[in-house]
Amino acid sequence: MPSKLFSGRHRIILSWVFTLVLGTGVLFSESQWEKFPILSTFFFAAGCTLAGIASIGRLWCSLYISGYKNDILVMNGPYSLCRNPLYFFSLLGSIGVGLATETLSIPLIVLIFFSLYYPGVIRSEESRLLNLHQEKFASYCQTTPSFFPSLSNLKEPEEYPVRPKIFRKNMFDALWFIWLLGILEIIESLHEAGIVPVLFRIY
Image 1 (cartoon, rainbow, N blue to C red):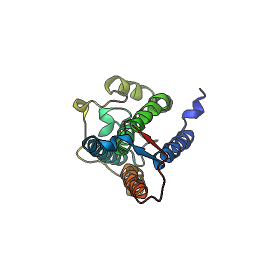
Image 2: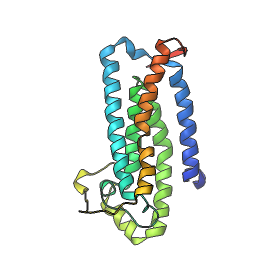
Image 3: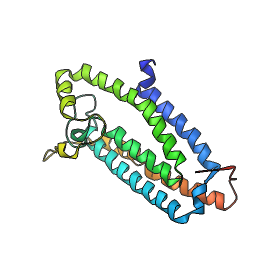
Image 4: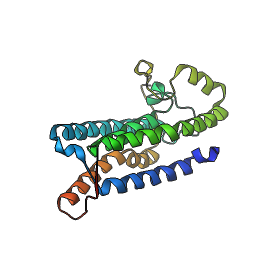
């Protein structure tokens, strides 16, 4: 698969296309689990919890990389837990939003898409970082897991300089999962009011 498919621009485009296609399905569907209120409520609560953790995690990541991503190798904070915390928290948030649809099918589709596409993105980005930082990045790889965080690795400085303008911009990106939860509630209200038809039901 061409390496450019994993570049930032192509990643954003593909992610948006995937989100729009999946979102269209959610717009015209309803959960079969609504027949079981306890289960559907549990799915929604679990989804909100994961989306909240993901939003906080992405804000934490943004604090450390705002303005530094291409200048220095960030290895503190969330980047001491794993090398790709932004993607880890993004996966948590995406699964969380999927669960908030009160289905199991949507989060499963999200997980499959992520598992097929994002390992290539991670390899591409880590190859770029290796070229930029060479031995320093190679040493970082030996002590820090790639994707799943190791809490025992946490390292945080007493002080950390932040570039507020860049961090403020990144704050909005980090809150997408919270906004999507609101959109799901609006869709449910549109279904109940009969404004948007339910064409099919999914588990």
